[in-house]
Amino acid sequence: MHEHIIHSADAECPPPGGYCRTHELNIMLLSALYAVSRVLSRSLAFKESLRDVLRVLHDEAGLTRGLISVVDPETGNLNIHTIYNPNGPDSDDAQYGPGEGMIGLVLEKPRTIKLARVADEPRFLNRQKVYQPELPFIAVPIKVGGNLQGVLAVQPEAEEDGLLEERAQFVEMVANLIGQSLRLSLEVAQEKSTLVEERDLLRRTVRHQFGFDSMVGRSAVMRRVFDQARMVAKWNTTVLIRGETGTGKELIANAIHYNSPRARNALVRLNCAALPENLLESELFGHERGAFTGAVESRKGRFEQAHGGTLFLDEIGEVSSAFQAKLLRILQEGEFERVGGSRTIKVDVRIIAATHRDLETAVDMGDFREDLFYRLNVMPLFLPPLRERIEDIPEIARHLLTKIGNDQKRKLSLTDMAQRRLANHEWPGNVRELENCLERAAVLSEDGHIDVDLIRFPSARDRAPGKPARAGGSVAPAPIFSPNAEVDIDDPNLSEKERVIAALEQAGWVQAKAARILGMTPRQIAYRIQTLNIEVKQF
Image (tube, rainbow, N blue to C red):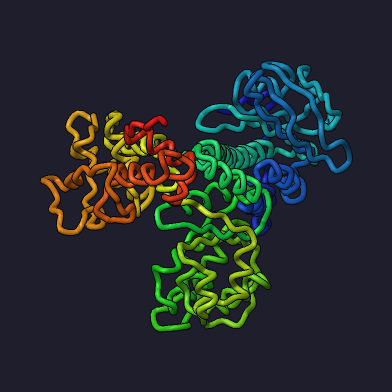
């Protein structure tokens, strides 16, 4: 609906054979409308586009002194956003309330206002000293989804010529385009804000999940590992994590990355033992289209994917000698070529490698390059097997039961006798074996209460030769021996408790000496005496 404060006269056309002014104006405005649409579709940077829209109206539509004001969501007033006035100020911090001036009148009643001569309207304020009093004036609401979001105001550069109505309709079309662009801009901004919130939440969650404070293990040896990892996380130093399978090498790698300055970028993982050499090269370095059969398009490798972040190479000791030479180059120079390509690609990647192999022996035997070993072994971290830190087993078990319980949607608990049985096991598979054991026990428990009878070790290495396993897979108890008899503590038929008692007997019940016999620390043997309920003889 249009509010005609001053009605314009009808346009007149020249004699036949000429072009009427309306036709000429329509051609000009159509061209300007196309230019406006191009400006608004060129970028989602909505605020930067508005000044370009006003410039197009000035240059191509003869509508000068453009002004765009937007509704303040807090106060509900109109704030001046953009002014295009080549001969005067182009910014202002003025506000308009409902009914205040011609701009405020649109805020009060969102409809088009057109004046044939702006000086004839007593409510016109002209605070910005932009508009010419003797020229026409047009103000149009900018709406998004039916709601007023702003006002577009312009002034024709010539006195009223009977075509004010056509110009007002054109300004309405421009306002509609601005409203549609504003709607898209708001949706993109909202989606971006949501994504940023989700990203920050995920970062906080990951930092908490892989933080050093949340890692399980309070033994002295594990505290040293955590302290070393916390120190090395601050730098870009190459790290070599060593330890038996299942000791948590990947968890340490995660903690180092997510507590480092590279945490905002990707942590890319690759198990080097999982792929043959020809696929490993393509996987790490990428390939160009047509490099080999099946390479239908170019593909980035793990090094490129990890640019600016961290690349975790698990089982690095399993790669071939030929591939070790290729790996050495990128570690030294930070550059490589894709398979089938000739362009050299430079990357900024931190390397964290892990292996369970004895690399020193592999170097001596010629299976692993010595120069690559020294390149990887800048900061070595040694993860001890679970059997050397049995004091951590109760806490690790509780942590794993919480994780398993969350998956099963119930609460799980472990009895003291079950904990003692866990401490009495050698754990050749380390924490991974412990997790499998507890998950198996949780499956067998109907009420979530795990007692000693549900703790089973079905692995063949846990049964003594010639001893059948009892029903359910648990191991038959070893025979009780006389403490006074000569006992070989290396006898595989002995239980852990029998080995400890035998060592104590040989050491005259001196715990430090018994620990040396068993290859343990005094703290470890003291913990075993406690958990195995061994009664210490006093002399």
